[in-house]
Amino acid sequence: MGKLFDVLFLDEVFGVLSGLDEKHYEKILYNIRKAQKTHDPELFKKTQR
Image 1 (tube, rainbow, N blue to C red):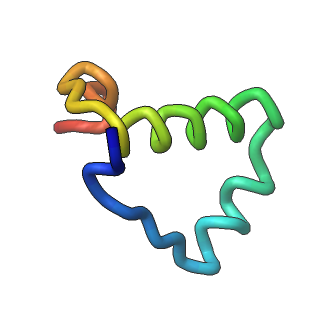
Image 2 (image 1 turned 90 degrees about the horizontal axis):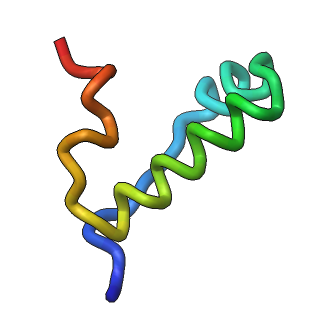
């Protein structure tokens, strides 16, 4: 199965991610990759308002 969408990061994102613990950094990237391949409404539920 291919990607549902592509992700382009702004330069500022790398600054924010580099300030995080490696565990959190990896978890964010893992969730982005997972979201690209599957439609899972629960995946980013905490980011919704």
